[in-house]
Length: 440
Image 1 (cartoon, helix red, strand yellow):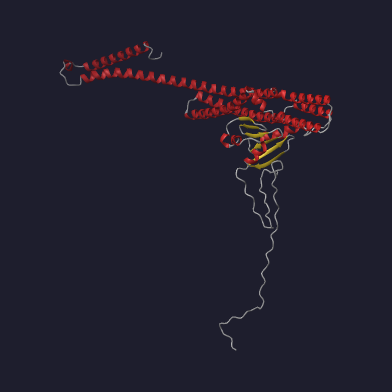
Image 2 (tube, rainbow, N blue to C red):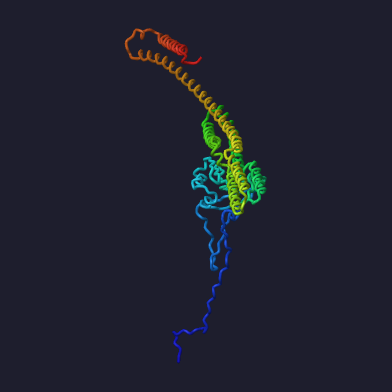
């Protein structure tokens, strides 16, 4: 049978087998942990990839909305960078959401020190932190202005010994006495939250002092140039200088007013003692645990009364010091005086600016008076010349007059008229000097 020229023949009797798809390699699963066990982030923060179930390749996680960079410091100075959103921070430190708005960019130029139940919200210039009895959370720690504060925390916090309070007390009364005496001895040191507050105030005051020093260094030469030469360029420099001074004074005044507000209210200062409240809570839990354990063992009545009296006296002694704010008051007073000195420096620069402006105004007034005197002198001269012009205009009207027929009278007439006008000018000028309208 012949082959059709339009027929096709199979070149191979076997079909090619399809390649089986290889399973992609499984990626590393990113660990998601709470704030205490968050991954340490380096200065170049990278995004970790999470593995999908069933051996599929996962995509990088997108940054959650509202997550911001925080740095956490504990009592012994160990720090780590973490990214947390608002809800995580609120649950961690137990503060209302409006306090986080205070730390936002809207209130970047405000200064606040707020006391909450378990935390202290610090918003001083560029330092925005949340301080608890155990840790401090610093917002935007990689900013250029915040780096000195971070360095100070790393240097000074490890020098302090953290306060350790046991969760439960032993049934032995001697152990309880040793425990409470150790706590009372620890309370004599400056609490952790006040150490952080002191470092923050020191960094802010140092920054403001350096800003005022720069302002003084730039202000006095500019003002001296303006006093020597009143020009548009010098006036523009003084205007810029005065605006910078006003802004700096407002910043210093805000921090000073916030400290003054705390000094005027002992209750607010008492609420800032976070370590004291934390220790009292630990002691209360320990006493409750001791009471519960003693209730399970039969104790004679006289020993039970003695134990209850001793426990009540311990609680009373701990809660009687709630109004003792001497440590915080001395701390705030020191920085209040420093800020007051900084404010006085700014006010002295502003007074120097005001004095320079008064001096410049006096110079301008003097020049204006000289111009007025010159104008008055020229006006008197114009009046005398106008009188001579009037006489010349009268004789120039072609009215018949016998003086026209006198030979050689023109020169005498012009000379006499000019002399009369000169005498009139001197007379009016002397009258103006007599009335003190012109200077001597």
